[in-house]
Amino acid sequence: VKESFWSGKTIVITGASSGIGEAIQWKLNGLVRRAYLLSRNPHVTEVPANNLTETKWQKLMKALGPEPVPQIQTELVPISVDMSSPEDIRNVLNHILEKERESDSGGIDVLFNNAGITAHGRFDETDISVFRKTFDVNFFGPIQLIQGLLPLVKKKKGIVVSTSTVSGLYGVPGRAAYSASKSALHAAMESLRIEMLGTGVRSIIVCPPYTRTRLRTSGLDSQGNLLQEPQAQGKIKTPEQVALEIIQAVERPKSRLVTFDLSGAVMKYLRVFSPGLLERIMHRKLRHDFSEK
Ligand SMILES: NC(=O)c1ccc[n+]([C@@H]2O[C@H](COP(=O)([O-])OP(=O)(O)OC[C@H]3O[C@@H](n4cnc5c(N)ncnc54)[C@H](OP(=O)(O)O)[C@@H]3O)[C@@H](O)[C@H]2O)c1
Image (tube, rainbow, N blue to C red; front, top):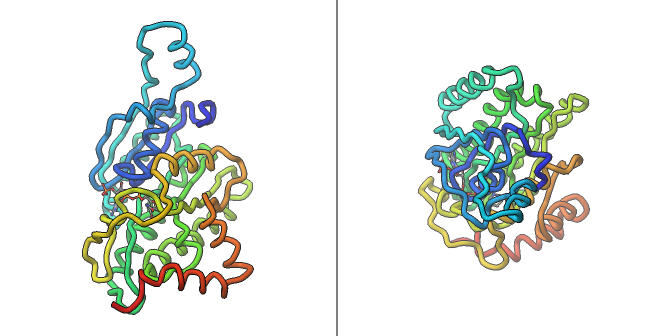
């Protein structure tokens, strides 16, 4: 993490109470000036010792003496919001706009648009209410929040970084609602990126692969019940690894659509150059996820 990049910044993280968003908070706590932490059940967790990001000054002080070195105080502002509720989002916007107006230097440097839910189910078995709910949380809520915060992001020539997924790069079988909601977000965030050209505001889309979080017990099944699925098999990243890669993507001046590993690279390139092959691979690899029960 580049200390000089984050020092003094104001950030917003949606979905900061768990998984990837919580790990982003841990990594930037003690570096940024203020962090708004949004979720339905916001809480401030102690940063685990192995997640502390030490500043150069802290490292130096530690090396010089036995005295405990205080962390730089990040102001943590937890706010409760259900991203599927336009009214909740209006309240959050008022809260943040009011607080940032308190000083001339107010504004948002980085908006981590990260909260989201998954939805598992075949296209032909997924209830329309599940499509709607998934879009409310993953698309309409974020759009309303980003639109509302854009004046503050513009003020700082800031960055909107959206946590999407490799499933947003192509319609994944057994994930129609999830894939569609994230692809829609891609399109809107690309429009934003182009409209903001020349203003200094950037829009980055990151597509992590399978990550060990609560996603598979916080999402929806085809009928709208809470999912109860075990973690994916095979290689799976930790939220801390993904958080660090997202933070580094934000630090790079040219990040646009960021994938993290082979699964992302395969999706990104085959969808353009050989979609037929990509579809056959997904059919074979993900068959157990969507075959008729
Ligand atoms: N895990 C993976 O394999 C994976 C892979 C690629 C991309 N992603 C993406 O990564 C992002 C973060 O997910 P995660 O994997 O870290 O899962 P997670 O552990 O379930 O975290 C999801 C976060 O979103 C918040 N959230 C969920 N529904 C919400 C709502 N209606 N309103 C407000 N906040 C809500 C949750 O907080 P509350 O419950 O407190 O509201 C939680 O903080 C998601 O956008 C997901 O699509 C995950």
